[in-house]
Picture 1 (cartoon, one colour):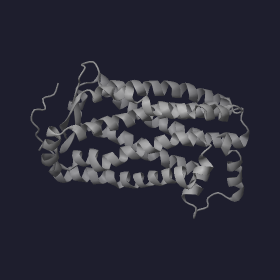
Picture 2: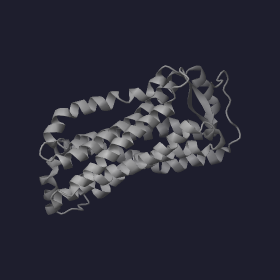
Picture 3: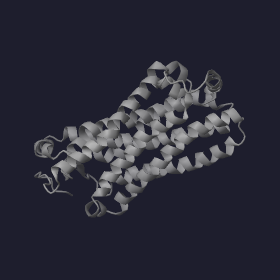
Picture 4: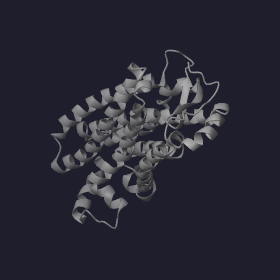
Length: 316
């Protein structure tokens, strides 16, 4: 258990270099947040009538919302307090004396990360059912989409309950600080639960992906193309989760790695950046219809292509 009776900032880190790291990450985090917010606006408001029957998109909206939350909290809190040393002697002692906000930040951060693992399962499940059961796919998801949403909301609590009952405190990290906790139960760690969620997610993703590939061979050519589009996005998310899972395993099985290799902490954030910023970009690059809706002045698809996409949109 860490001794958090006093709080002292780590003065060994050079101020200008720490601020430079923060600015460098802002270069892609800020445009990424704006891009995701615009995509959410298009999918949930501007073009909702078009995408309302697309159950993959409705689940993908959860993915976008969690990515936007993680980026915003990193910009305005997580990276800000970690990489701006002048803030450390002001905010560090304050959050040590008043940990409620810090606890909310740590709980919500890990809740959203666990939610991504749950969402990944349903994204790949949606692709599999659309390919394997093309006739009953829409009826199945129409019936169970509300249950999927409820599970997406409540299942992540299974990964964060230890944080809810534990004491959270600011921990000196780089030139600033990050949130840490004193475990209320010795065997229960957030990294262990996050790793469990990631392993379960990867297990189901592998099974659903294999079945999806098997079913793709039997689809009509034009539907095969559209399924391939959404499968590529799903595979990209899976690829990002592999990086995240590897780092989670490091935290679980190598207790001294965070002390011996402090750069691992920053790499963990960068892997989530890759996942959060990269996924919507890939979606727009390969999806002509969504690209047309987000950038209507750049009509990259002719009318025939759009009509073809629209005619089979309901199946996806």
